[in-house]
Image 1 (cartoon, helix red, strand yellow):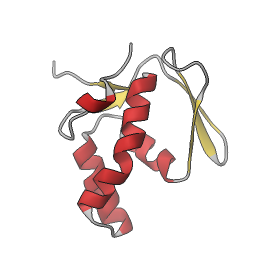
Image 2 (cartoon, rainbow, N blue to C red; image 1 turned 180 degrees about the vertical axis):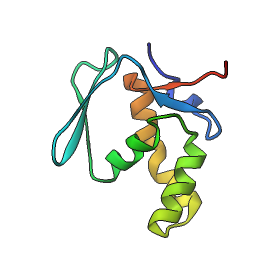
Image 3 (cartoon, rainbow, N blue to C red; image 1 turned 45 degrees about the vertical axis):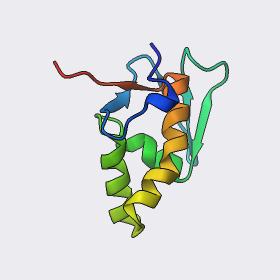
Image 4 (cartoon, one colour; image 1 turned 30 degrees about the vertical axis):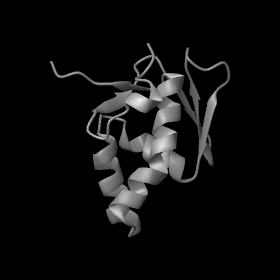
Length: 101
């Protein structure tokens, strides 16, 4: 299952870890193995924090707000900074849209 196309990732869309993604952690990184990526997606530093925010489901806007508060940065800047990573994770199939039951 793949996530939404990068251009379609709305900040209010609830995203979460795809159930088929295989996650492996090392002391310095997270490796994501998905059907949508020919090679593992490697996350380091703040990218790991962003990935972890989506574990149980969140919107990109909520993640940006949390990171802005945590690191003392502007909400808009945080949202702009994490958008390419979120698009990459959706494209790889690591994040998927969570639908309400």
